[in-house]
Length: 312
Image (cartoon, rainbow, N blue to C red; front, side, top):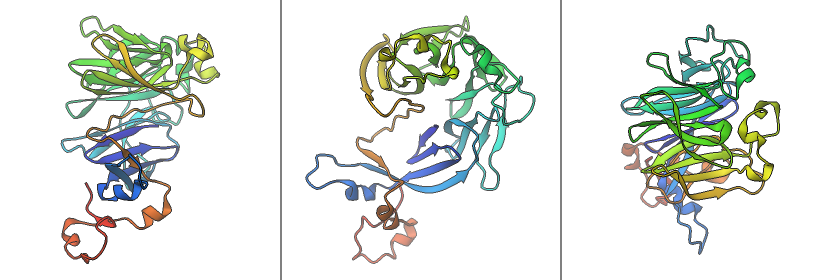
């Protein structure tokens, strides 16, 4: 589900845990096939794992002055949390309309947005305080909230996700109709910039270009009654679309034709062309060692420098 990248670190939220990977570029030559035109320039290796239990983790972000604190959306308990080496999670904030911590997905809190290095915005599918209460009005019950004062910045949205502060605007995905837009600060209304052929979820920027995840949406009660689910199946795509935020035009896309039907998180990795993430290559993981800088001076120089390296 959630993905967060910062400073050579990549956190990935899964069903029951959060995995943290660090970039070790010295391993890259081991990934390049002989005579292949592909030359990897980043390799993320697992460094730690935190077991959260099934909290239905959603969006994640590194926060703090040095981006050393990992925040994540705990959808099942309707709150924002940080990691702990002792506890499943540490609750840090929840909407004022949610009265208690309970594993009941009361409002389907899902999106997390940063501003000036701090967690600032969230999205929820409803202002509800009962188990799964958001399902009753998912077509237009969605909200964007400023967590500093619990202010509802925009309401009446269809299954919103991924609030993002970029270029002086608060952007958000109105997923229920495949929308991409921003919140007008004067009126508090959603201003559409583009409508894409899928359930929009996952959002990042590179200059004026926005990278947006699209899902085909499943034929299920969860997605019934929303505009995107009423489109014919062949008009609902899965992939990553790139739009020019200045005019809303699609400039590129990667479309999955088979097997992959949903995208949740999208993260731009800057200054990388061929990154890879290793979590299932037992030989590579067993034979790659990351040491502190002072320890590297003690390593036998005859060893292959790819084998033992410092972390980036």
